[in-house]
Image 1 (cartoon, one colour):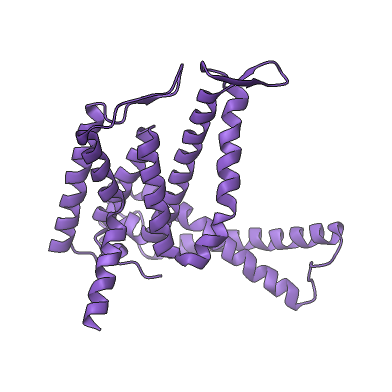
Image 2: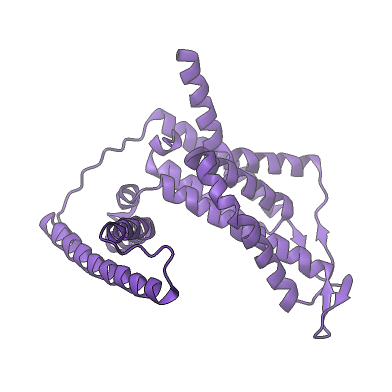
Length: 293
């Protein structure tokens, strides 16, 4: 699905995701993490569509509860004992709560990385960091596109194997293993050939030369200035709230959280508006198109 936010300047997009990752990882707070998770989930639904998102929904609860249960199994801090495990260690309410929040943080980061991978393409990363750290930006951009490209190539090779009569469906485990090794061997060969072609192409285009110029299609417009100003203003307000203890939260030895005040509500609202900014942009543009049509 085409995203309107992806048409903004790469520096605006990168700044948004930078603060999104920062607030998700820095604020170990159930309210803040709920805002992060819901914002990332809604934006990913805009990017990939409902059908594609529903496929991932099957794994999310499994991943969430498995991560949430790992912490109480090893962390026995807290004063509210629910029961005693067979090992004799206590299972505390605080450790369960800590595990749930930590699992929510990990899932939120995964969702934001999915959105980042859809929006922040390799050419945008090279545009932003190519002059500062050219080698690192190239490696980072190639790493981001490796997994989806490798996955698509595996599908292509598997379909080709099926066309020549090497269909593994309904066969025994040994035949599946042999077919899997064959596909893996093809993928290794493809990866090496692709690496050589990429290196030759980069050399032909003058990569690494000191006086090499770069072509760019990006321009910083008034729209980008407004979006960047909104992102920086909301982020500054959230950071100020964090410095004043709005997001203070602890699970041990007992659950303790800063009280909800009018100021805290305003900070949470600012964080919500910041993280939902791409969704607001998408909805605004959709309304404009409907009004025009």
